[in-house]
Image (cartoon, rainbow, N blue to C red; front, side, top):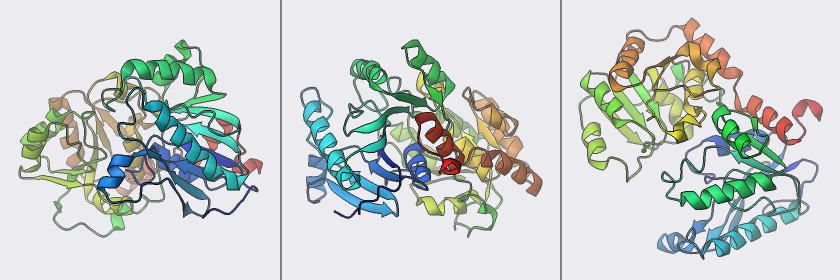
Length: 384
């Protein structure tokens, strides 16, 4: 076992909705921030046995050390693992992998955090079982290719079972209150240290030297492709950074990416992101209007501000009022393009960057981790 016992630190089991090495989002950032004063056992969603065999990887659950106080658990699930009749096997294997990883740390957790609707709130003995709503899972059923009715039933069961409930947005908090829960809101945050010096990061060859509008994140059905198309029509240089969902607007996106002035990079390493922010003049949040997006917390908006950029957005979810002074809300392709062009007209001044970074600092992941810890009864650094 690669993890030595260390019960001097609080033990947090974080059963994530995304794998540790996926695009860095709420799960990885919050878990990483908590690991500054807790031992975090980060549990990936199960990987299908079929996928491992295809990749010629030995099909077994693994436990690895990915940081001084972060243990990664990678469970294996059966083929067709989310199908009715197979889910019970998936759950058994998932829970067994968690229990085995926690055993060297005393066999129990100070907090068991489940950032999904999977039945894991009693996977190991824990002082507090925490349901963490990183998204409106039911509203996102189609996006995640899951059964909405099954998710709705799982949601009700999870809310009844949890000792504490935390959500990322007031919209989701209100919906879960209607189901009888008492959630606390801890919104998404940003990694201010990574984005503090974007202006001096090495440039990326081939990007427009005169500045560009930047989108960073998953490129999927959450986005309004008409906004990107209108920006290209209006001659706004576009740089799109992130993995592209193969099911989303395949032909239209391929045509968009082939247009002059549009660069689609695909995924890039997280540590390289400041290089792409360097030449940007505005960050883009072109989300479609949907219940799923309305219940989200705009993680990328915080990151754009941490880089000192203004933001053009089709919507600003409730609870993100702290960002409002630096976000131009412009629903619809025409208004959005105009907002982006206005921001592109002049690069951010040092004073403007500093003001945005000052706001971002109040939303740093270290701040969010302390808020989360307080919400679920974990000690926070000042209390240790």
